[in-house]
Image (cartoon, rainbow, N blue to C red):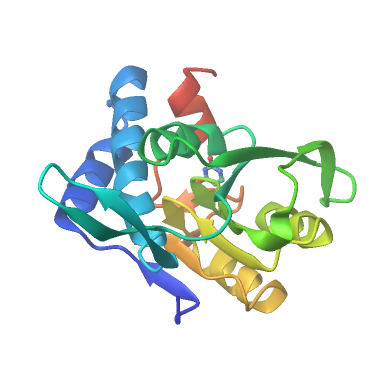
Length: 210
Ligand code: URA
């Protein structure tokens, strides 16, 4: 991907996102919409995957047919809200390898602290797609990418549903080599670090907590 930021403006994505933003949308519908949007975003983020060919036999004749080249993708969910994007993407790319990064914010230092980290091997040979619905301050996203690079990843993309300008700027500063793909770039963060207009707390809305 050439651009650091790609906003996917497909009408189906935008319509579904509007439904997700509405505060009266139920947990079940929110989760279903996220699953559907994640598949449409997965289509975009994998658009330029390297291809090769394989000889196959159709019922009529042999042919050289296109297939994906190289090692399988690695999808990395940034817990916990990342799992909402992960589920839909795995339906589309069922053979992808999966990893998880758990980070929480230390309220004293305001820095992200790692509490869980498990990723597939050979990250250096895979396209790595890190997923988190909300790119807000960008601090935990940048820290998650630091960890993935520490595990050898060199070809990384960051996929989210909503991004704030502050988060995009933070990612560009920390990881200019990591393209960000999102369904919308919202106006700003509020004083509590929520994206405005946003959709609220993505984890709470998808899991029905709070
Ligand atoms: N995380 C969320 O779930 N929502 C926001 O608006 C910001 C961060």
